Amino acid sequence: MKKLVVELGERRYPIYIGEGLLARADLLRPHVAGRQVLIVTNDMVAPLYLQKAQAIFAGLQCHTVVLPDGEQYKTFEVLNRIFDSLLENQCDRRVTLVALGGGVVGDMAGFAAACYQRGVPFIQIPTTLLAQVDSSVGGKTGVNHPLGKNMIGAFHQPNCVLIDTATLNTLPDRELSAGLAEVIKYGLIRDPAFLDWLEKNMDGLLRRDAASLADAIERSCRNKAEVVAADERESGERALLNLGHTFGHAIETGMGYGVWLHGEAVAAGMCMAAALSARLGWIGAADLARMESIIGRARLPVRGPAALEPARMLELMAVDKKAQEGRIRLVLLKAVGKAVVTADYDPALLREVLTAYREG
Ligand SMILES: NC(=O)c1ccc[n+]([C@@H]2O[C@H](COP(=O)([O-])OP(=O)(O)OC[C@H]3O[C@@H](n4cnc5c(N)ncnc54)[C@H](O)[C@@H]3O)[C@@H](O)[C@H]2O)c1
Ligand SMILES: [Zn+2]
Image 1 (cartoon, helix red, strand yellow):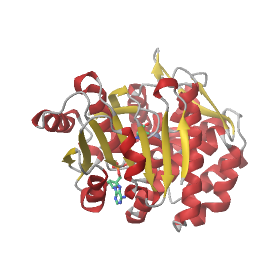
Image 2 (cartoon, rainbow, N blue to C red; image 1 turned 45 degrees about the vertical axis):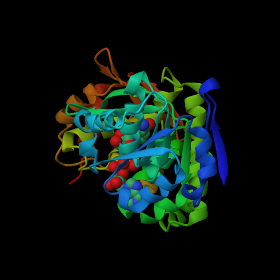
Image 3 (cartoon, rainbow, N blue to C red; image 1 turned 90 degrees about the horizontal axis):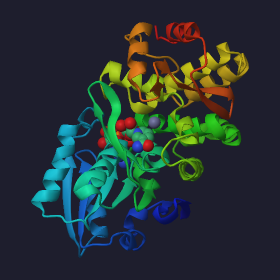
């Protein structure tokens, strides 16, 4: 087992990574203070892992709420079902919420924990690669609004994150690839040596070689934990984690939630960000080609959907929270392994990229 710590002073918490950790009640139980637990999961994950999770909390009052599966259900309406369950079961302020599932379940359970009685503890048990390398760490929680992705939310850190890498064995290939988009992101924004490693190990990751996956998860969580510890509330460095996301969120919202997976939209978005960086002369054509190659090898899209015209993309991108004072702030690359946040670019070049980076 590997253990990392997210260093946030009195809110510091551990990330446990290893195969079979869902059987390790001894790791989780110390993070439950009260007698009540509410497990939040969905109808895809419940048949696979709910029993194991419930066994961890044997002897406590353990309730469960099973949400419908899918990004289109990451809404305020569905969130309310968690509050219904908390109140129906008379949960008090010492209840611990447990998120068992991917990023959708994690973001919703975390947001419910941030709101219920003005904040109760929660634990993340992420079961997708994307959630294990990104969304379960760092305390960003929330739901989507029909007009914009993740627009309603709160910062609320978990008490601990338990990553059982064996859960990846049941994950569909398409979801594995989506998770790899966020893994590659760390290499691009701040860890060029990791990018080299990914180029050497991509085939093993796609084959689900257990050791390679565990290494990639640990290295990703280490990057995420460092960034979050340095800038918990995203006043600076943390914004770099949004590489490709302003483009990606526009794709997700524009196509309808769930049509393009988050990781797929981010992958295409990272290519667009890199293409703009190349047009600004910050990275070379070879750097751009290298990026598109690793993203393509991860079986991810390197172009946006044909259905979204550049003008529509721009409109959707302006809604994203990275837009300030009317200018769309973007995470761009000064070099491979070095990202910056800037609104200082020629908008005509952005338009050019949106036109060139459309499928079909
Ligand atoms: N909070 C953050 O910092 C942050 C960061 C990145 C992404 N996100 C959010 O995370 C979400 C995407 O997360 P995701 O990619 O995990 O999607 P997801 O939660 O929809 O999970 C993907 C699919 O895999 C299924 N699944 C989960 N675990 C499984 C398993 N072990 N075996 C088989 N199937 C399994 C799910 O039910 C779902 O159908 C987006 O809403 C995105 O905005 C949040
Ligand atoms: Zn993301």
